[in-house]
Image (tube, rainbow, N blue to C red; front, side, top):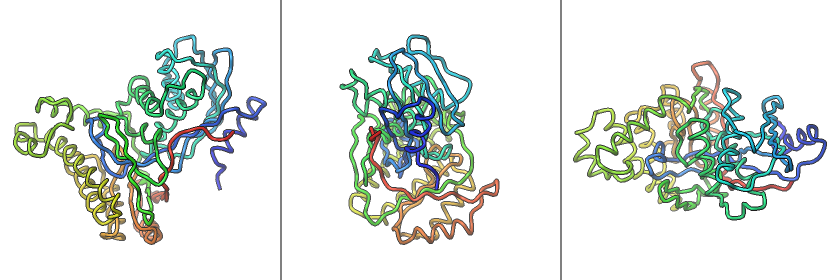
Length: 387
């Protein structure tokens, strides 16, 4: 059994700084049940926070120094001052997620303080479960414990984290990951309107397990394919004369879509139909209708495969294996940015064992690895924990 991030951060903090931490915060990763690549199109998403998280153990300093120890990276250290320029590093990447949030908070004129902090987490990295958003939100939550941050709400921290990832790290992600991490609700998915930032908890049926399967097809989000899709969506929105694809109805798409470049039309069709599926999924979940949820997840996967073209053969195969086991009893689809990463299934608890067995028997990643399977619960969002 691996040591928990809570225990690890506290032990490393004690060893490094000779005292116990005075503040401990956590922020969860997330999995998106449905609503892919809709967030940066001002659309709708239905993620939930999961019970894998980033933990930061810390204490304030009075000299304006921020000293960060990464317990998951051989206790590597990054140190800088709040009163000097905070620059982006070529490496390591983890340091830039912390630096970006700290810099964003400084630029907003908030009453910052130096910190000693130790960071550790158990959110699987590179799998599409938002380990980076979890880290960024945790950093925001840590500084939000300072005096003078009383007006800073969880949604504000989410948006600071997104801004840092967009402008400092250089990934033009939407706001879903950070909002999920900051505002998660135990036992619920979150219906997030990425334009109005309205968040509505939607209960997940008690008989349903969230199963996440890491395909071990490596993927990177700070890359050309993601940004290319984003530009295609913006091109489509301009064609229709609207602010974002959120404003395009199926009727408008059918009427004027053929005027678009065929590839751009496919991208737009995915986003417009996916927004409709998210609304249907929220209704189905709230009614405990896993069968309908399954149909919508299947349609979502087909749209990502055929119109948005972000799945890969190994992911399609993994989805197929799970679908064969669950039939109409639940749903399965690729989740995350695409080109690898994870598959999510929402299934009756009774079928989890059969899924694990079938995937273990039939799936191998291109590198020969088996899928790693996580059975998760929908978790509460970021906050302080007892030190």
